Image (cartoon, rainbow, N blue to C red):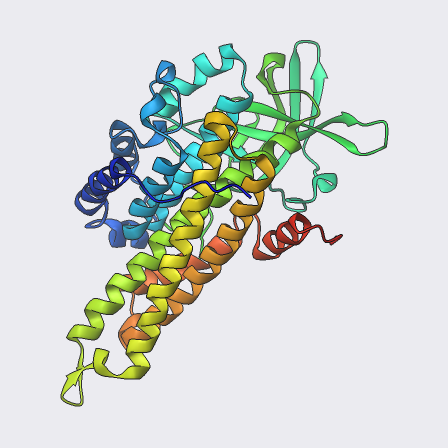
Length: 398
């Protein structure tokens, strides 16, 4: 295994402070109301773009940070935004990891020049359409089809649970679709970019979700949608493999979002345990409360270290090849599994510390409690992570 260091640099910590200041000033005061109203704050998303948060992994030629940014910086930003609002944290995570990165990694120069500048600037968003009503991780169950008709792809099908797919600033959604059949009989899966507003493409009514109320999430439908042949993203037949690689990055970013959640739970629990008085003193002096909060501290440090170790491996792999993709893949699965399950536990503990008040929507712990569960599901469930980890150890798990 690589000995890649994962301690954050002074520059990363300075960047953290700047993002925290932004999050506390522009997001924290409004997060509860956005959650209550199921409001997607386009203006704040664009302010995040003006701060450069969507361009942290992009080259300067497209308006990104270039050498001044890296994947670790993106994780820092997601953690700090997620510390005050998980909805805005996932908006940033999906906007970069699922919207920008597939085009940046697999797009042609023409595709990059057309789509990336506005996405990197945070002026527009892009979605990532993999999951279907009957298919997600199971590529063979994909039902969306794309048929090449002359110089156009004709797309028919449906996707579900797609983030950043139906907002007023969504510019496109990249979707996986069957484009043929392989020699072994398996479906040929390709990735195709479908611009918003294309006839036959519709973002249906937004979901009424348990959490992430302020994020933009829709089911999508495609009925005879025609897009130019040059909207194929990457190599024909490699769409599913491309999306799986994209998900590895996303798992670490979701881990960072989980770290933000745990940090919020710890901060709120420490403050409340010091203020809430029972039986003549603060509840924090009771071991039953204090020990639970101590567990939050342990989970926070472990989750943060696993997350930034995986991010450091990713940066080393991209920078000079001093880490391997297999090392990164394994580290990503470990970080995602541990941090997301810890985040769910952390919200349960924080809610318990708050007692009856934790069950009231006027307290942020209730919002974090609702938001946390999906962390164990998106970007690959906990069961998928365990399968990947076991395979990385050489076990023949199916």
